[in-house]
Image (cartoon, rainbow, N blue to C red; front, side, top):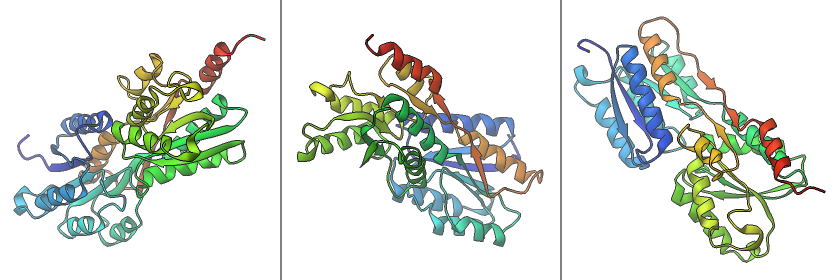
Length: 308
């Protein structure tokens, strides 16, 4: 695409299915919008991501991107990198990060694409809370495996979950992961080694993405009694067709929350701002949905209950 404007998209890791989906979505959207897109993965390493982004910002002027779309490894959203990019005339669109500095940058550089695009993360937590109420109407202990606690995604999903379960008899025990399957497994293993876990009656394990949910389920293998892997419902989030939704359909997970890719919408926003069709909004929130629906989940629970 000779003469097309260049955009750089930076994602967390190529090892995660949802991150690959967002990258593919960004590529397809860039092609439709006649943009040249370069995609980088940071291997979940904040230092590497900073080096990659500064490399693009400090490139020769003709090689600099018109905008950077980034899901940052660091929860604070790489403020210094963002300010340097904007000062060089480069747009900065964050994916799934809520940060205070964007408001100031938008006021300083009103013509640049400066925005945040992400799923309504609080609503994701609320949906998962509603799933918990269906699965454990009598209350009980819920192990909640979050992403890194310095990220707005993890914070907002947990806030939505707590909002729904607070009035119920459910008790949350929060464990921290790093979005990967192994981190979900390790979070559960750490909890299982605690003296307080012995004899604990866990009603549900709720994880903030499907990868950690599968890790948590793996950590339960070999456990007996109420904590046997086959007996404890495990919930995830992301709900990709060949990921979380298939895991639900095959019984590996009990339910998930379907979150849309943010890569394509972020690139489309950049394209429209660069064409002067719109002024960048401060943020764009995309909807999430339960899988299966809450009604179908309740029906499945009724079908598995023994007859009186």
